[in-house]
Image (cartoon, rainbow, N blue to C red):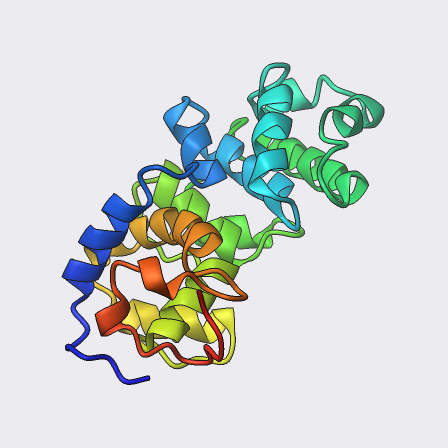
Length: 222
């Protein structure tokens, strides 16, 4: 379907910002609003969130942070203690090892803190562009675009970008999306993608930007 009016990202972001107000917030942004907003906390929460629903990520991260919120604090825990705290998360044993390794490097090399440095963040085992950009954007005031499954699906479905992978989507968005939306697009498109622009049978009839959406790949909707 061809959009009836030209795509206006300012209008789109304003409408979606309003549309997602009733829905639960994206986990990392919710945690940051609760005060868990240091680079280490955002990074750990992002690792916990991998292949894990927000409904599980939030209480799991809160459970851990109630016990340990810093690299030094995490290192006071044994592997078994840490693993028990994040056991509800998918692949919790691998994540426990990653978190302990990051905490050890932070203490040994970076004055007991995770630096706001892209190359260092990417050097941590198991940390990719999405978590790196979320840390930099949320905790470090360095606007970056974090492309998860929702940002990937929705921006390509709009026809705003035309990319085959999340990595290509990030590159296209960096070239096109106004910098003022780089962090917010992840914050709003997670609840939008979960509740309106869903993977199957998207709720196009209630979409606030339908007249601008190209509906790329949509064969059936509600």
